[in-house]
Length: 356
Image (tube, rainbow, N blue to C red):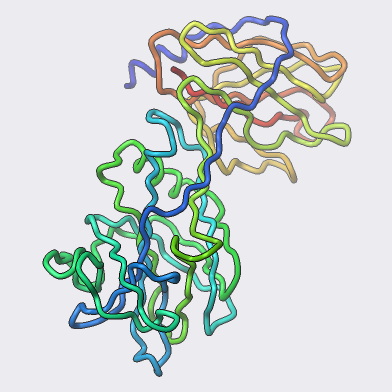
């Protein structure tokens, strides 16, 4: 891999004319394949696999103060092409009911054992659970009645990431590096995708939320994924403020080995000179250098500089030739042009290239 990266750094970038721009990344919104609740129970006899709500937190003392843990799984490999690069991912879900008003910090854990959903529906709003039937997941069982968790309350890895679960209403979690890494792994290793388990710190009673399931009549739980399929390119993030707008970089074409991809600038500082900087990988959050001024390339590099560009009328153009024999590399590019700002430069948004 080190040798490949070194070779990939030795690319030649030539200036060409061209103004075609395209954004080729795709976004999908996937409803859960299965979802359910683990109800704390010493007998492991409570479940609600077919219910319209799933629960997370602790119920009140009137309900025994028991713990509730949510389990969700999405079939990512059926909706995202194999070999794709995940750029962002977020949950889009709905809290239907809760005794609390303030958000509560909720942990997302990768489930490490396969589990079954079942189809029994608990009575009432489902908060107390119902009698477990064959094929249900319970506090003790990954598949009732004969298959057990190694650990009571479910088998799961340490916390991948956290998010704020509201008292009621919609919640869309911001994308972060940890959820992107989880989704990428689930795509690349579908046999190990058992979904996530959501739990709170489980210290306080009356904190349980009722979240809509896939069986709910509307507002079902979704995973929203943005990705690049092999050979696709994308424009990412927002450029720095310039002349009342933003400095825009556009990369287009198909990133097959040997292809020359047009890279164009619009609304750049003008007249000016500048350079495109390239890196292997990118920072999805970015480093804020000034207000509304974000660096999307990895802060510590390495960065490879392209040839000098001359900006006229806010525009400039160049190209990047995709190296042959290096599929599966994410190359990021961000433009920088001289200007009169405190840093003496302004930078564009990023372009992303997923080589094929």
